[in-house]
Length: 348
Image: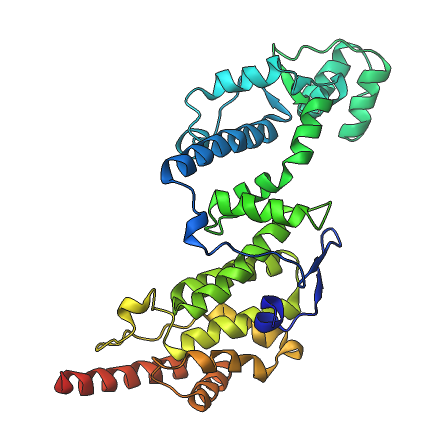
């Protein structure tokens, strides 16, 4: 059974909303597991460093579009991308013709309405109208405008092509899904073999689906929950309420089972149980779009209950109780955990 089917009950071909790209689940997209294929660490570090250098160029160029030179640069260019001299890197983008001087119309749009009216007043021209009308009047009358030495640069044709070919890295920058940069690149390359138009959302979606399944299989339930949380963000951005509910059910089920604090098989056998903490926004998602609620979705946890304090029927009862009365159910769960821990104290 494919991962998309197993986790979300999706069809063999899943359509994403943004580009209508179809991802076939019968494809040969796989995560490499054979340790023999892992390159030496030093080579991997070199690849990663080179890739980060490329990504930093993409992110900086995208940020510089429509900005003055020089500018006040965000600190993440240094601490995340290792650009020691951002001003110099900005200048290199201009020198290498990725950026060019903007048009007069573009520069005028950076001015305030009061500044535009002042220029029209100096030329004894009409000063009424909205901002677009004021700009057009300045252009039509060839009004001389002093931009106070500001040099604003926009993407050249070369820059536009470069950004277009690297848009998934911009998505990667804007979405912190805890995906390794080499893993992201690898999935991108695999997807490009099947789709000519791959975007960052689809790359992230495929990786996260694999990670959920892998972490559930390896009993890393906390990590699986975090992966599902990332999927929740993707579906929320698209207002994909059907899949929002599917993911919310799975996340809440992991929480109710008491497995969400497990990060590896090291802490599977616990003598002292932490309190079960439930996220109310998941309940809100389910209740707001209850038409998509499928109780069978809870059953995905059945094969992972070896270390849960509850059986599947108990989990379902608690799940419905949470939907009905969140605060009371959470309080009762706290009391239950206290009782279990007291019993374990006498046992051990």
